Image 1 (tube, rainbow, N blue to C red):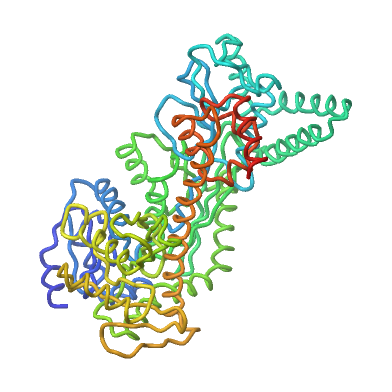
Image 2: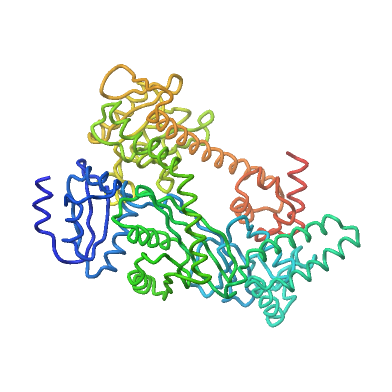
Length: 602
């Protein structure tokens, strides 16, 4: 603590970000401060602190800080550093769920309607997000069925042959010059009114089509129309009648028990409740206002920023207002709801968060045992030199030496870090030689250390190999060749679940009900699953390419388009003629030929 006491005397009166480190030099917490001197000193005063803060302070061995020009800059830097280091005591959003939107490409002469999960400043109009059981494909299908607008991305320049959708009245075929821009614009306008929540015309048209189909004894089509009407009723039921129908707001409630917290999110668009989600927040922030602010900054770094945020009174309103303006260039109305309809919505979000906290807190504690606590226990049981924060596991997959691939999965603090997973095609090994394949993969992986790519591929604390003492020794040879000394290595033999380390000859057996062993099994099994999935993808794609080469009329361009669209033989065999014909360059006649060949030859 001597080094900390000396550093506390040197803290400036400036805004900035502070970085707490444990005895191994790992970043365990990142925070922002209006005045660094005051904020950082609070952690080391003898005053009473929440249990979650005490838990973190006990593990602080050192700290650093970065001065910023303003508190807003500190807030932005804090968010970036949390993403970079993923500190164990910060609030981390494990669920990076992005919800689907409907995009209307208004910049095009004949706008198309498509599903997307990414919002761009491209002149398009976006509707959503759609959540809570609403299927975007059903909505798009209803839009096309009702207003005959196009869902495809076929270029509308030049004369093309109209597709099946034109002949069944589901598209005006602008790509074939069958409709003028003015006529199509009317359809687009009506479709956009529908997406804005005006379902009256769509309901009337669908009802009429359902009656006509029933009269013509086309009962399958009539049932489809009936299902679409049911979906519209489901959307209509979500309208909050007491709200202005044009309100676009996210409502964020908050509940805490002093150790764990939950943010409850509700989303309204055009006065319609789109749905909601609860986020368990396991962080060491000093107060609820800062905890909620940290959640909001992280959440809206990857999600659509609404026109209005409805939040509790303790939220840092002014700071958030300036942050969204200065970092995103967006004026967001921050409403501290105290009464009226918005206060009732906030209570709804808060009640949802409180219920989730009550029911989920046991799961959260169990999750700690399965992850962070399991890492600590693994370190003790295996005599590892340091806490295995970043663990990497490798696996090889092939059949008789064909389509040889490898996987690398990454777990951080005992949890899968899927964005860091990597796949490898084996390039230098002939035949089925798993030892040589593992040698190649590890050399390729470890060669990134000490280079500019290490920022993307950080050094692991522990590498896990599937196998016994022989596999461990083979990998040790790679380490020796490359001069790797500060990464620890173990292997897990599947039959008896024995663990081999470099600390001794004998294997170590951990009881099957121990969280440390269960974590190792999850990592090993995940590496195997990821490798098998990649192998099957390559193998299936190679088989599909071979089959397509046998069909007359399919050259390299069309073959690549089909491969990109369907990816596997099973996918294209299960596709309809209409779905195959949607691929660029594939006519209905050729699609029928492909379907006929697959049905009769395989």
